[in-house]
Length: 180
View 1 (tube, rainbow, N blue to C red):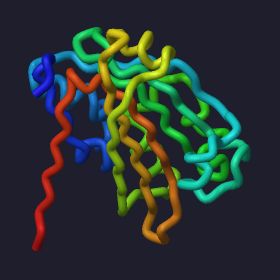
View 2: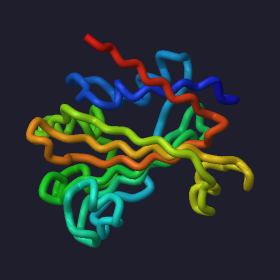
View 3: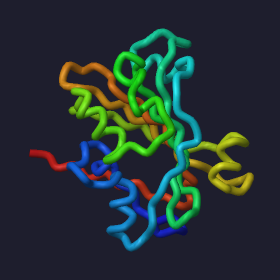
């Protein structure tokens, strides 16, 4: 387990929240007696990077909506997350703005008629670039985990791509899968 003692699970971040519920991160941290918060660093339309374009099924460079957030655990950087959405889904919505979204992005997507039913996550490890290192306050020799999550709707259309970067020494990812 990482030095922070934090174990991260994906399931709470894959389903919309109920009316009046806060975001999943704050709730998960509070359940562990910790404080989870986030800062929106940027939101709006950007040209789709090649990897994101391939996952969303759009041409590279086509405008997509991104929300870049710094995720904090007890006021310490825990994760840098970029969430990308097709402009057909997110353009002109709160996803394109910097204001907090009640219940989180998945709740808003569900309200807009876009519900994820299939998620694929790929995790790799490597060294952070300088921007990531500064945002996450890692040492020059500290590796990071990179998690890329693709969320598809009932028609197998991509509705969201998340690119997360986490200090490897402060994280433990847990996957629990029930078969049958």
